[in-house]
Image (cartoon, rainbow, N blue to C red):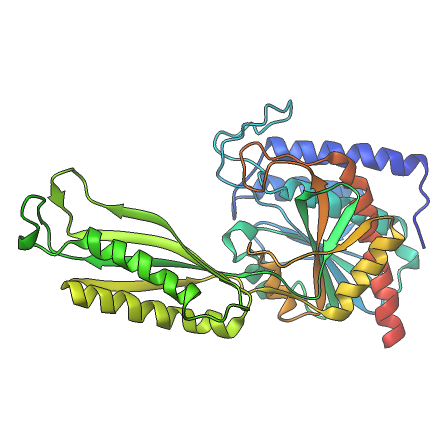
Length: 387
C-alpha cells in the first residue's frame, strides 16, 4: 500500500521544509515549548485534525481515525537545547543561546507530515492513530508527563524516531532489544579540611581525595563488570578551589553512567558508594554520592522492530540493523508499558548531535513522513488482524 498524492505530495514536501525551518528559527527549551505548542495546534486545526483535551502545559496529542478498532501511536519530541548556533544558515536560531541541535525540529515536521497524510486517509483507517508531540525529551522526563496525562491509554503499539547524522538520507536503522542506554546522573561531594597549600599536613586534601575517587571509579567498568555487558562511567565536571595557594575544604564531582542492563544499572550506585566512602575514609575526609535516575534503556519489541524494518523496505529505505547506542531516550518509558519500536532515520552526513553546527538533510523529511503514515496505518491493520 502506498500514498499516491502527486502534486499534493510535492507541495507537502515544501510545506514540511517550511515547518522545520520555522521551528528551527524559534527553538524553545524543555517545558518552555509554549510557542511551539501553539504553532502545532494551529497547523493541526487548519488541517481539521482533532486534539485530545489533556492536562499538558506544553506538547499535545492529536488523534486521527474514527470509531472502534485498535489504537497505534507515533511520537516526536519538540524541545531544543541551550546551545549557541554556529551553522550560518539563513534560518538559523533567532534566540540567543538556544538551538535545535538534536533535530527535534526535523522530528516534529516528520510526524506532522505523517498526521496530514493519515488525515487524508482517515475514512480508510481500521482504527485510530494518536499523534504525540512530546515536550522535554532532553530532560529525560518529558515522557512521564505524557503518561501521567492519560493520553496513551488503550494504545496497543507505539513508534518513535530519531534522526541519525551518521547515516545518509534514504537509510533506516533499528534493532531488536536495547537501542539506547539507560541514563543516570550522579554528583559526588568530597569534604576535607582546608589548609595553606604550603602546609597540607594541617588539613585533609579534598582535591587529592577526589582525584583518587575519579580514578578508582573506573575499576567498576574495567574490573567489576563483565566484559560483555557495556557500561560507561564518565566524570564530566570537577569543581573545587578558588585560588592557587589554598587547599579547598570541598570538591564537587558530577557525571553520568550508561548501561543497557537494568540489573547492572541497579547495583552500580552501591559499588560507587563503597569506593567513594572507602577512599574518603582512608584520607580522613568525608564523601557522599547523590544519584539522579534518568530514563531506562530503550528496549525495542522484536516483533515490532521487525515490522518497522519491513515497512521501511516497502518504503524504499536502505535498511540496517544498527548497534546499540550509549545515548539516552525517554521513549524508553513508553516501551516499558506499550509494545513498539524506536527507529533511526538517516539525515547525514552532518556534525554530531548537540554540536553547534549540526544540521539535517531536508530531503529526508517527506520520505520519513510517508514512512510513518504508512507504518501507523499498517500497524492498525496488523493489530486488527490479530484481534
